[in-house]
Length: 113
Image 1 (cartoon, one colour):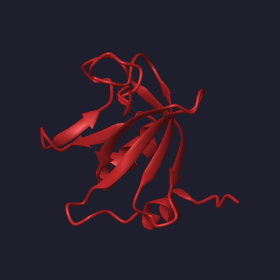
Image 2 (image 1 turned 90 degrees about the vertical axis):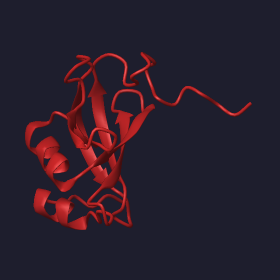
Image 3 (image 1 turned 135 degrees about the vertical axis):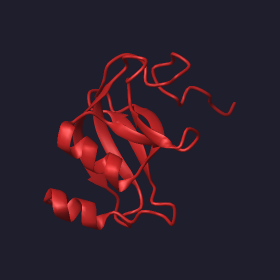
């Protein structure tokens, strides 16, 4: 079952926390691999939906962060999903270069043994 939402309905479905943030999971559209998790504000989510260039909020720098702005490893939005509770966003993306700042293809490269 998939509900197709308008942009306005999609944004209305999202419950930002008390700091105005929502967690966003980036997933490779091509492979399904989970690439990373970051935070978004309403502003960065709206920018992402408008431009197709994935834009996050950096909690450590307290500023807008367009993925790939300095590294060149951009994420292009293919699909945007919101979970049933409205408190997590899933972004299916085309990833150019590695997703992780370490140079790894995914930030999830460490596994419990």
